[in-house]
Image 1 (cartoon, rainbow, N blue to C red):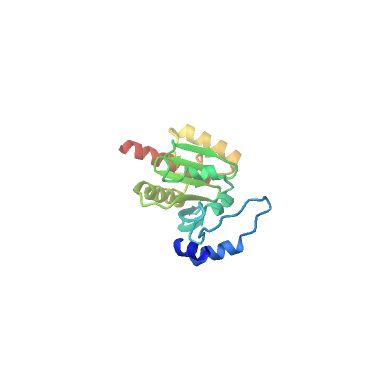
Image 2: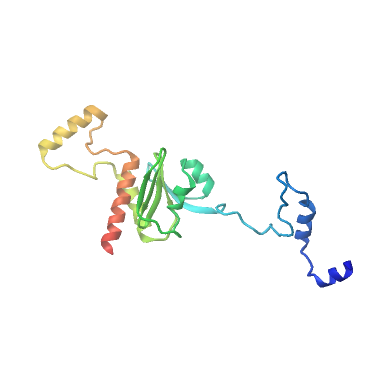
Length: 195
C-alpha cells in the first residue's frame, strides 16, 4: 500500500521534507505548525528597505535606505502614521503632529519632519525634487528671506521685541520644523495651482 501511495503522489521538494521533519512536534498551544510548506522563499510584510531622501538642518541631503521598523524607532512613530506616506495608498492631505515628528502628506509631498532632519520617500517626481531644492536654498541662504514686514516703524518695533525675547535680530526666525513645513505647504499650493 505504501508503494502505491508513493507512486501516485507527486514528489515533495527536499526543503518541505526537512521542514516537516524538524517541526512535526506540536507547539505549546497544541496547534501544529505549518507542515509541508516551503517557507524559504517567503518574505515578511514591511521588512523591505525603502529609499529616503534625508535633508538635515544645514541643508545637506543624502539618500539613505532604511526599513520600516528602523524608521518607526528613529522617529518614534506608529506604523499607521507611516502608512500615510506610502505612495500606493491614497489618503486625504494630512499633517499629523506627534511628540518627536510631524508627518506630512500634502499631495505629492510626503515626508517626516523632525527637529534635526526631513525624511522624504525617494521619488523621481518633479515636485518632490523641487521641494528638496527649495528647502536646501532656504536653509543655506538664511532666515531673513522668507517674510519681511511692511513699513519701517513696524519693522523696528518687531525687531526690538524679538531681540528681547529670543536674542536674535531677525523678526521672522522659525525653528527648522516650521521652515520645512512652510516649504511643504508652498510646494503643495504650487502643485494645486498648476492643476
